[in-house]
Image (cartoon, rainbow, N blue to C red):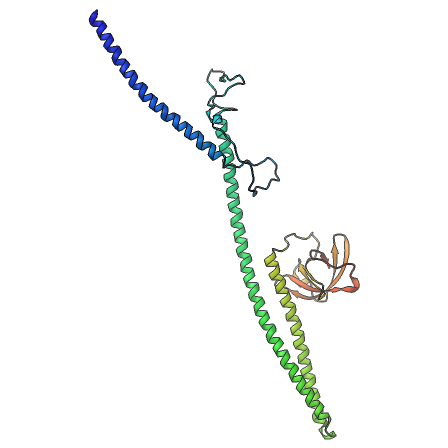
Length: 320
């Protein structure tokens, strides 16, 4: 009996030592799991503060920088089981404890994941919009460079035409001086004088042609400047209602002309065509087309003051 008792005592001591060992190991693992749980809860709350909460209204500006962020506390992440208002753990029909539903860690983490996914989707949409904006900006920059090149070339042409005009004027002055000198001579030199007069007439025609060319060049320079202004300012993107022939892009009251964006093929609008200007249901006046730029799909017209009811403005519609 004593031997059996000794064996039992030794067995109890051995089992106690094993239990103590397991308790130490399990305590360390418990402390490790507890530390992980606290660290997970702490960093989860920090991550939640970086997630935006978009209001339900559809007119909210998602580009705003002051949108509210999620506010999650560590206590919300400690509620592993669902509890009723009395604080008791809720069980299902089989008696199993519920770990999902309101006021549980599962609901909080699902809410964080859902809002994070929405924010990630908005970020991708923003990236797509940024890429489209970058492409549009590149196209606009290329158009601006081309327009500036055309403007520089036209300025050079204008300067050359102006220089030729000065030379022609000087030539005319010289011929006029020669005419005045010839008129003081006798009738024998009359035939030579008439020849000089005829030459003066040719030079006058040449001067008129040069002045006409200069006026046309000036109008083209003004048109290029307006194109440049449109490229730099963004322009109007509102399409006119059906049935309209065009829309006024620019009004110059000093020179009494307008620039019209022609909607139908330019071949249907020819110079000297009279167009009616209208703003909503109000008659503004009329304009007469003086020049059509087919490759750029717009026309330049002179404001007919006899028909003017009120000054035309940018955005007014024109009808044929």
